[in-house]
Amino acid sequence: NRINADGCRGIAKLLQGEDATLKYLFLRNNKIDDGGVDILVDALQNNTSLTTFDLGGNDSISDQGRIMLLKLVNDISSITATLHSNHTLTCLDVEDMNPDGSFDDDDEIQRHINEATEINTIY
Image 1 (cartoon, one colour):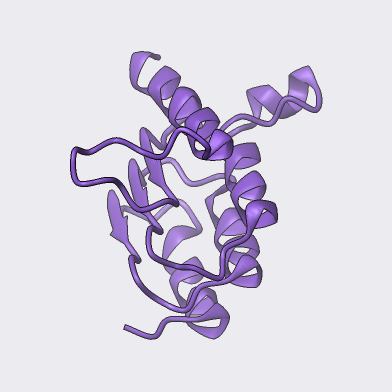
Image 2: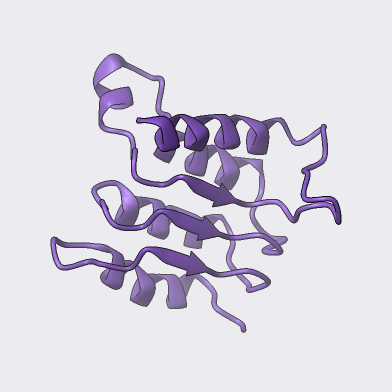
């Protein structure tokens, strides 16, 4: 696929509103960059249906885009922001997994995303 920021605008419409029911979204190996991430994060702020979101293989997503995704699931800028984080997502992958199912140790942001979504599975 070649989904980019324009495609993300269309996908965002499917993720917003009370009638959004999509549970799994796999957008691996597309052309999504930080602009597309920003659009999708905005759409997912109040989404309560999506549990799995896979963006692996989108090499144009920088650390800035990864931090936007981390803030989506665990915004620690204030207590209110933390409470309003998306607590529905239980799997959010930005980095490609290693063959053994693990992530590189040096991807600190993905590790924090994993910790936040793991907490979402508990509560």
